[in-house]
Image (cartoon, rainbow, N blue to C red; front, side, top):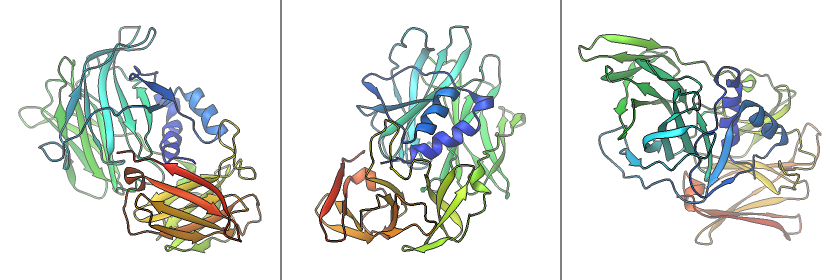
Length: 374
């Protein structure tokens, strides 16, 4: 089942030509996680993106506090870097990623060439994790912009995190929004780190035109324009008619240039599926998949095999909701679509669930259990 991390990887790959990241220091007990498309795996390898799944949590987060609303920063001691990878400097800074409601960690590291870079590792709602180190050294810089959590579709939480490095002369960081308005961020220096890590959380639908850094006198000492997030899906036109689905969702076929199924709510994209391998629903390892689930708020939707007539979402206490499937109207074959709503939670993976598929006679065809990721 494809996890939502794929959309973030695609967004990262779109900027890879200018931001090709280095491999990060690994956490202990890491295992390589599978992306769900062969093409995504190939692109990720070319771009230098490392995708891993954690076997243990990064750290515990404490609600409340003075940082960005809803969490307080926590630092965790770094583990030694394997040979050939950037050596960590000081401790890690771990906060909650507002786009995923899961931890995101930052730390400084020194490359084999002697440059100091800012690295990060973030968890997805499904429990998968992506890591990278910035390609822009921070040595001698008053401040740098290192990245953000923007994705296409926009994060379901409605929030995006921008982040980077800041020298000792910086005392305030502010995001300037395109539609007007400003959002003040936070500055935190992990113990032993050469510089501070700045973060600022903004509404997902309000682009940031600049990040401003001010000194002790309140005057701006540096202004950086974030690199634009450019993905072909954002401006693509549907091929043929779109389909009205339950939960007030519209499903459309797009060529970007690969065939892509994009789900929209009130005109805003909320989920997508790559259809390159749709006739066989194969994952990156060549194994057949039963379902590709997406979630947005309290909506759940996706695609499944062409023998599945009904899909059920079963919660931890045994209660469930179900959705009938329908064939695709574009006559691609090999998959059926489904969509529904549930009133249980706005974060399915946090609570854990089981998803199952049934044929037209009610016989169970497949079942997948997902343990809580929080």
